[in-house]
Figure 1 (tube, rainbow, N blue to C red):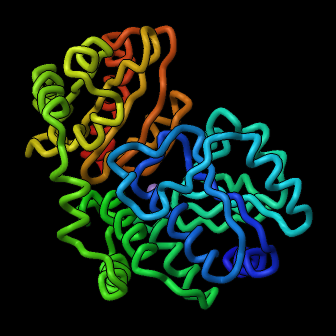
Figure 2: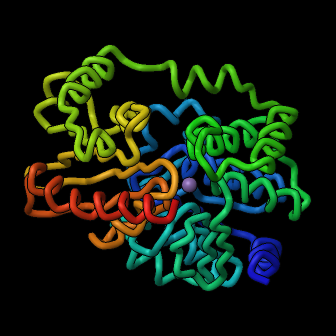
Length: 333
Ligand SMILES: [Mn+2]
């Protein structure tokens, strides 16, 4: 079984490079830092590789200071490790999510993949993929128990962040009784829900609130208010002195409208390059729509990127598929 072989690799090897998906979210950052801490306690050596610095909002997590962004460090670490080394990809739904160094990262073996995206093709040498898991952090908790390692209060906090952010504060459909069991255990181990919620959700800069005001003013509704579209341009970010990190969770506002079944967030990364987040409620499968445009994700939360297109054109390309997705949902109800 894949879980067993992943456990075996983690037991046998001594030195690990841990890497999340690019533009890491709370689950990716929390899973990497927690697993590193757990492996440290087992006497292993670990290196946490993030191609860009960890997003500011997650830097309060213990261990974030150990993030390394230089690929040369990864190279020399794994060369020195030889047969004792392994690379672990966390929360990466496919190989391209490894980011700009994917080719080099994929050349190292063994590559262990631990992930909870249904669409994961199993791009590693060892793959443990649980599509029904609410977060990769939930899986790391199981792994730690199996390895018999200590889950320190710091690691418990990181895993709680992973669970809380990837479930939308325990709101999304993948949230199970097991998720709450794990969360309860993490609280028992030292994670403080109120403190972490304040760090994650009550921690806006004034610029971020001003940006939110601008983004919400772009709201457009289609299909009898069942599809909502918002957008952020580079100009808006420049005007409010914010970055793309500041738009995290903004899509939850249009998604929260009672009539809305699918919400779209268009993000202008640079002129002509538009990244799209899709969120759905109920049966509408937005991972299928993202996949049509080279992206992927979960049924209710997915994304894709468009090049050489403006935001209006991206919206117009997506709308027919969203409308069809909603009709499909209705016919299945
Ligand atoms: Mn995740």
